[in-house]
Image (cartoon, rainbow, N blue to C red; front, side, top):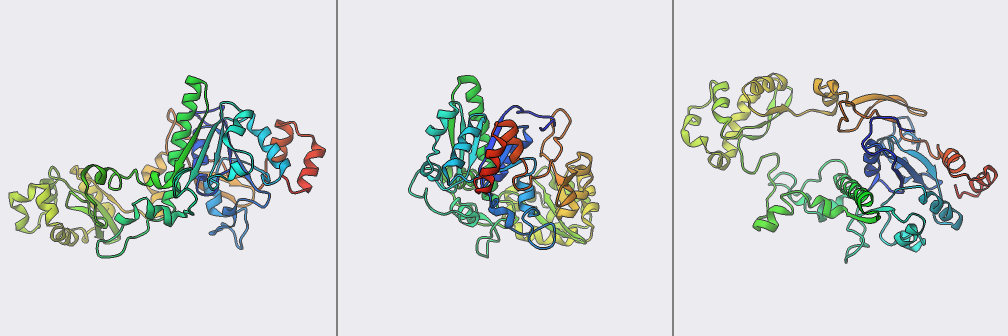
Length: 399
């Protein structure tokens, strides 16, 4: 059991999600919940996704699976057969939350819809994550990350203004969907504690992405469509990424920072001393010119040296870190964001922990489970399944 500092201990979650909702389960682990990852007997498909920590394609060493399922307990179960569904319903009786990301209607076809689950656990929180939600004309549309990012409006405003839209890195839409579902689950649990009722949380990945202000708020309120601007801020200049001798630095200089910036930049062009440049909108209208001049200044320095110089004068500026540089950052190390964790197949490695501390302590990282690692412990020791029946169901591929 997890003895880490916790905000939401004593809650138990059955995690049926695919990679679309797996981060939600991990977030619940970091909040202190016991999360049981339920995989088909052949394993979650993400176990077979590269990159792998070891040579070959060992399903126990997929980096994506290791990251998204860290800290969860793991069991296997075939929900497509009656015995598997009955075992699942038995598990539901002792759980608070069921998390799933199947296509809408899939659980209903199995006879495991929300009303049926509530017959076993009347105050159950069911969280469903899907590309477009459980209702509407697109509910049955397929929605991989590229599709939901495009349909959510974020892709349109991402990238260079002179090029086609640029896909953001990683699977941002899945992670936003997971964040929204985790938020919904916490609200559902609060309602259960205050009103004694369960709820079905219906999280749409498309809607989660549309929470970006330039997608939903700006257009719905002002009717404005923000065009792609690369790394250039829409209202401020210089507010962009600028080259240094060893990489890039991000600088955000508003009206209040402009005089201090010119003071540091001793040999700046005299034209920049004109009082009209104090106005944010004036500088933003000439962003290309200012960026060009700024680049000639920043390229003289190493990014850490320039960061220190600007920060001392109260100018927001920070280096653009590579992943390796991020791990070495004194701030990251001081707050112990990474900590060693040992996985039975992969060995010991540095794993990212929770993005928060609880009373000064960060919940320590735990490894992802091996396939079916906790089958016997959960089914037999906790659920009381007869060991002989367990072996029979395992031999039949139900478990």
